[in-house]
Image 1 (tube, rainbow, N blue to C red):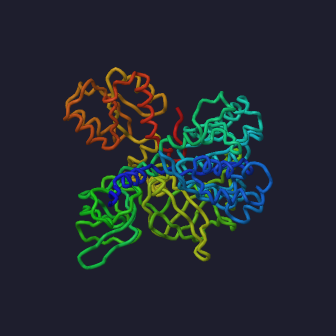
Image 2 (cartoon, rainbow, N blue to C red):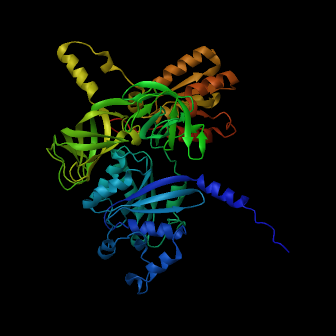
Image 3 (cartoon, rainbow, N blue to C red):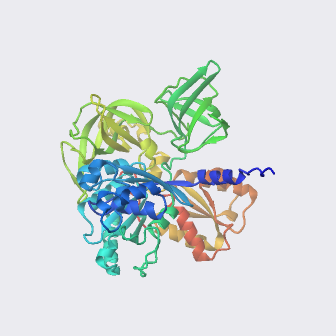
Length: 577
């Protein structure tokens, strides 16, 4: 008798669900011997993300031949030098997944001399797990790493108060250290902080809830990692598409390959090429398996354009109505990675998106003492140093402030002789406009271009992106008060009190000013819903359909969505409510 064929539908559904899981990249940070590698090893072990042969190898190691607990740090400290010295040297990347999310961990060193490695690991992360030793409290390196996390724009910090078993699992120790760290976070203007008391060695509150700390009711470390909101690497809604490669397999096809660094690109969208400023439209979006209707943020694709215009590697396709800044003079925060100090006016290679140009640091504005956050005058920046500098490039870059986009606001500096990466930078603001204004002061000739205020500048000033919130009329005033008190620029509109034309005109102005507009409704017509959708696109949040929640729950939902709009301020940090 023949066996019935095995259906693959269930397996395919499983693969599809696994592909659709969100990916959270996070890094570890803290001082030497805070237990970072042990915590990551325990997390992997308890989340059942360690292969049996790996665990067997660790259990048979020289360190674990005697009786005692498993040395979980050996699951991540992979280099021979690390095992011999008992420290983390390199950035160790580990992958694992749960039923809810996929994760990439960057386990980074705690030694001050490897601060540059921590900055490297954090550069692509969405969250930092900062460890604090419950027996030692906050140390200088904890402050250093927390500052770097804030500098790199990590939107979330998860503070693991580790080694609670060595202090008798006492609540007062956790509360004291939590308050100390929240004071530091307030100084750094970091708003999203979750503190968790843990013991990496014993496994308390890593994956499983601890019976030794019944006084703690918050999430475990893994629960927070599975539920924390993941913010995109760019809040720019306009198109940014750095061209990486021109594809010309035959005379009939000419495509431009790259990765979407801002907005969503759809067939038929108008685009402008920089630096030529020639305009055209997207004819089609081509992938290996066929054509796409749209390409989204961080997706790699090939664009075919309607017109034959001159584009090469390093150029950028952008939205004509909202282009990036085009400048060869700007300020940036730089983390210096090389043993040889930064030298003023020396020529380096600067790599920004797919563009490479020659660059020189013309001035060091100040160096940051990360122990006390003071700004110090200096003539050089040594390895692991952090400084605000002014740069000039041989040809213009097309950038957005790092506060708005990691993808188009970051760069690296490379030594032209050794080809070593010597610095990592985060662009703050354009200097050419300031130079034009200064020239006007001298000559008395106004330059209106130099005073133009862009939408990106308004977003950076407000500290958040614009949005339209459709809310039930009874909670509109309370919702505005909640959002206003949290530091957002808000305004309530009564939808039923104005015509469609008036509503569309007012929304356009408020959107340009980067306001969060609450449209109070009892019910809303199809026509006015279309107007709201046209004005806000993906940033229209409809809370009318969940009006069955009580007022408190509804306000919590509104605040949660509004928090996702925040960005780091240009030249600073977001306001804290």
